[in-house]
Length: 213
Image (cartoon, rainbow, N blue to C red):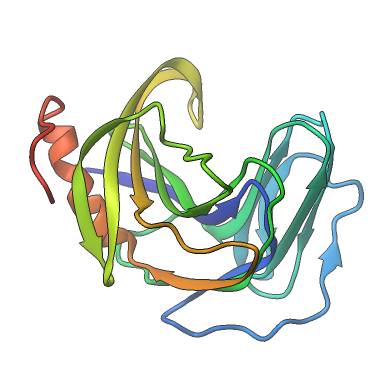
């Protein structure tokens, strides 16, 4: 049986985006800054959060009320942060709203892992310029979810870091096409269950490239 480890609305570059359940959008409130913003994970105001940076640039991750967070950065380096649920569930409906103003390679997505099998998954809503994060993946088809079309892609990661240490595992991608506009306010709804159903044939038939889901 698939076990959902966690489910996040996360970004590599994001300002004030937050996620809520069942289409309820939260009002903005004062943010509570994490001192120094070292890489960390845990719970905050009833939500699970995860924040990682390679410390190559200047990055600030800030937890806010309920599912709110803020992420800013400058310079080079890699980082990812977000807020969501641990464990996750395929039946959750995620609404998000905030401001997305990247000035370098970045993307905004729902992100998480499953165990049994070990899978890293992405539902990408937007990304900066032509930096499609799934460009190295193999396209398997497409799926329509909540009125939007997403390309379905798959990647094999061989002996790479995972939630269970260094492992070989699959990455499944749903990339919104066309992507949502960035540079200001952004909002939307993601139904992970629709994407999990679209990815299921990949797990059962890894060689199937023709089917549209």
